[in-house]
Length: 290
Image 1 (cartoon, rainbow, N blue to C red):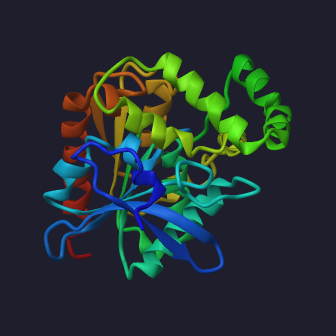
Image 2 (cartoon, rainbow, N blue to C red):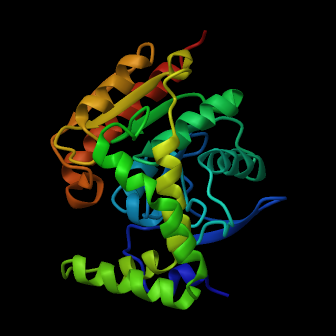
């Protein structure tokens, strides 16, 4: 039986997805490119309210030439694990459990925006598994100014309201909002289909989890090759925050991209070369004998 994630035809560059049972955790959803034999494994971690397919739609084909590529839908996103509570640490543990199921002994997490904290937590909680990291459009923390504090403070009430609304109604509202905001382009129906699987309550909880996240106290202990892809025109996660993250990690290299927060989708011609360079730097260092 075909997965519901493929009910609307995906762009040809997006690999087909499949459900994967994580014992004791739930059923998640991944898209995978096998890559060359013996290639390093790269796990793509998407941002808030996106999915693995949507966030990395332009990355599968170019990265798959050199790496085994796995993109996961996080909890409450797309066709990821359905959950009563969203925790970034659980998302990191899901990746570790997925690696165990797929017999992956070493991987490089590539985290975009919310995926950045998940990648950081994956290193923090499962160090032997992580051989390097690439962090994109992300930071050590996401709560700084008074405007943000005011926004995050209402999230528990928003979450409670969304939890009491019927699931069909919640998803219909999200699809309507995205349809109004999204310009007409090829693949639009597939994008809406991807987003229709999002649980709005989980998305709100994820935003709250981001507001509470901070790796400030331990990020300086990162001991694997790391690259930070900085989106220089980012209006959501300021480039100065992204550079502070890089400055906190010993030996981290910075790869700038002249784009805003959504550059991974809106301008892949700018983002993909920087991502490829960042991965090459990390994998080259990770392959060196100690």
